[in-house]
Image (cartoon, rainbow, N blue to C red; front, side, top):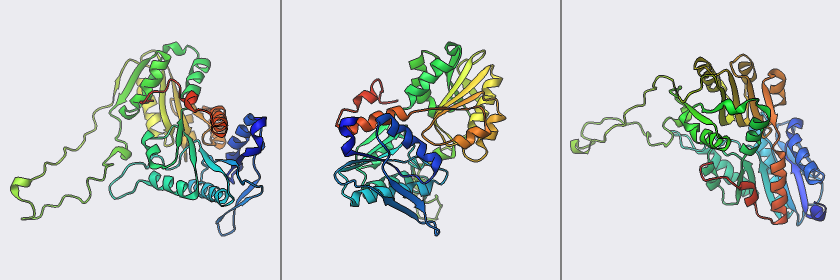
Length: 357
């Protein structure tokens, strides 16, 4: 990287010390120092950003990991990006390992598609490129009018399974719901392992009436609709009994998903797998949000180990739960930054990744 140092500036936009760790790891891998910037909160809770070096004509990369205060995290990034834009940076690339509000990417009754709003704000602030990882829905890339590189953490998680789980050949990959079956299938095919799907869990509220077509509610008004124009009503869903499609008896069960936040569904899945004969249970996820009492619930559950990447800082959660393990993904983010800065192809980072991955 010595020949590119002059035109490359890396900033970390987060005022929280634990969240700046990712920026330090990436800058060390690239052999450059972090750019000088002050990001802090005023006494009235307004965010203040002071860029303390010239960015004129340079490629700026703003690394932002989501802290507990997600709204402050977003504002810190937007203000820093806009400051670089008004300081005549040549390009401004946002590096968000976890894209905030990604679960709010579909219409829900009279709600809104918040991830589309966040995308518009980032573009308006001055982003020219975005690097992220394992978007909750790949279609979120279409919310941006700038290039988006949606990197994958699965190579790192697959490597962890092969190197850190003894006798992983006796494992079965588990989807805790049919919605995560594609991800589980991808892991199973790459590891040459069996696949199991848990069906019949409590319905995820995110998937309930997400398209907005139930608004306004149907009201029968005399004479308003001609008898011949009656619209058939959709039959309501009914939760079936919990079943496990696939054999987990006497096997290691590895549950895979993209996000682990509210752990109730994972704990319930682990109990079901234990009842079906699984003797060890792992949970693998890219983004470990682990809100509220999640560490305590994991510690008290049938789950043996939870493996997440460091897209989100979770050092405090690890102090509360010895079962949480971390996989470092700063290597692929560093390589993405290097390739974008040097004008190299990004296809190497997406090799062997299919449309459904």
